[in-house]
Image 1: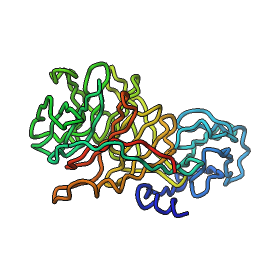
Image 2 (image 1 turned 60 degrees about the horizontal axis):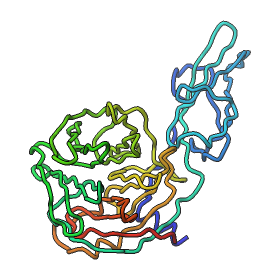
Image 3 (image 1 turned 180 degrees about the horizontal axis):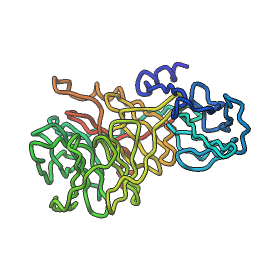
Image 4 (image 1 turned 30 degrees about the horizontal axis):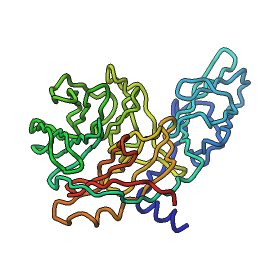
Length: 344
């Protein structure tokens, strides 16, 4: 229980879900009944559906759908993505039909595992950098930093902290996360609804791209086929790397509710590792359904860097395939930590 309480304080303060009443026509003669408790149901359950027939019509048939896909009145949820969904029922009676709907939230069935860490090395890091994202490419660290009139893209020798290459963003842009794919660097801006693509070696700007339904630009990572993008909500968007179109999304959830403030992202061994804004933990997320399967508490690291007025939160996580270790830092931290993850 101690670990669970600590977990909640450090990272997983959640946005609880309270599902409303049936939506649609107020004069509807039908409503949907489910076995979801206060609108919430675990993904190891079977969703049971029925309709309340308020005027005792003779019902011929009922068609149930979730997000436009047909389902049965008893549907196992293990293959569904977590988060908010809309259940719709089309009720056929005589020559008439009526539609009604209700929201549900599918949550994970397991508590996240708790992980610790072991510091392998400490390296110098630019104390003035408002770090938004870091990523390794060919054993070299790439970094995107934020703040208006301070944002930049950098290539860094991580062992010495020496800046190998640097470009500054225009003053009107607030830099955010980055990722590298097919010898291109993809960099987000915060509220400007635009991202930039650069040559990984020269930093020549090749193109820009607009956001779709995602609200803002926060973090990026990729699995060599898909680019994942966070926008500060519970959603992680799946982008086509050829078009940068947002084709789908997952919602980050625990067994208790949705997790908002998803920020810097890193793809590590088949999972998405994510900082949460203003927290000192990193979530380990299943990219298929959005489940938080583990949490790493990095709180003690902040006390190991130089304390100063501009010091801010943990933000920046990168996996180096060469060393098979994880590197973390924070906003205006003067150290970059190389760590190994340990299950408690």
